[in-house]
Length: 226
Image: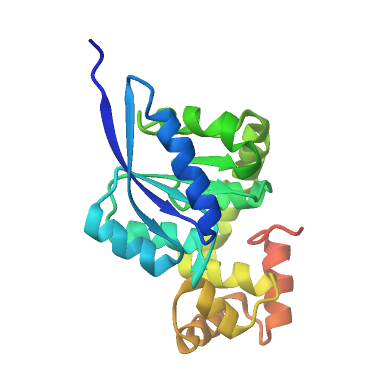
């Protein structure tokens, strides 16, 4: 007789209706003889997600990339900081290579398109719980193109400039046109911390303004143009 694998799951999405639909889908999967999924909590924000994770230590987190008080990339970094030992599967409406690459780079075990949830989620869950990586077949080539684009030249440039991971995150949001206040919300830090990071970034890039920093980042390949 096959052993039933029990998995505790945390749902992290800012839309209650979507979380409810997700519960229904997971209940359907639990009818499978070899997989039992128990939703132990729901969260709509970064802080709620971290609180539930510390309390429940779920085996699996299903994570959206757009949340109240921050985003999924920030959440992935924060989960690393609290040494979360489970798996994180990103469920997102974003299908751009850059979003997928950044999520996987930040620690996601897999990435599922919300538009393809019914056809991808079950396979994605069974894949990541075996400590394997799940990516939709249609994005694999784009992911590795981005991986190559970011790999040696990108890392060498970052190392030469001594840019930290957090400074790169600030730089990313800067190139998206975000204000200091918006960057602070995205990264869940204070405005003063963002300003300190920007001062350091300006010094390392040898620039004196936000515009110059964006131009320098694009020229150096630190940020991909869209």
